[in-house]
Length: 297
Image (tube, rainbow, N blue to C red; front, side, top):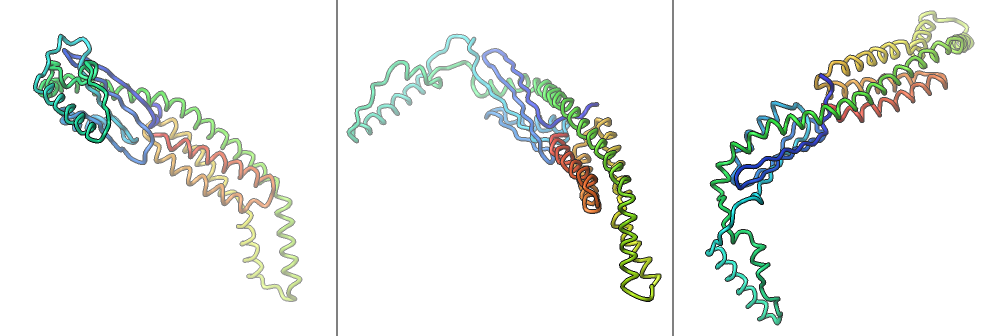
């Protein structure tokens, strides 16, 4: 299975007699799995089903699921709810009287104002009947999440190419660092001779133990073979994770921290402009890699 991004969008619409609905799902990156639902009143029971379905489908990401339900434009003729109309007109009269007391001249009520209040008209779909359609509306949840998963997978394929390119460039810089480290040989040898000569000049009697200690410390300070070997292992691990295709976002993020630690040590022990340049370029690539890893599930 290819890598999946945590970014995606999907939308599914449906209809039944007198009702239309639209499900939409948005997903962005997050440390864990964060689920948010916007479900209309009367369909609250759907939230639990949505949460379970999202939990089964994804392991990470901030996922927002929304549902909009409206009266179908193809519904039959509406009848007037006279009780609602009477209440509406009574409210309008009260507002008009209050406005006139304040010295204002309100605009007269028009038929268009009345028609714009859809609550006045009996649409034939009560809240109970909307609730009865819950099973039909819920049937679209699997399709919605399938489309969201496909969108995240599509983003993931593009993301995999970017990550693979960064890892390849890291390998290239690692080769350059090895070459630069090998080229330091004469300079390192000269430095060791200089330190030994300085130590011999400082005393008439050579403390062999002290000399051995100083040489060992200097050798450790300039030897970068372990850092290069660990960086090489990290590059291999990154390639393996990209090929694994499982939810590896957390592991990639941790690997970037290890990359950065070794690159920092490499730069601090470089002792040459060429090796420092290679180390700094690796740090730049590691930052780019880590930024992209934030979007991997």
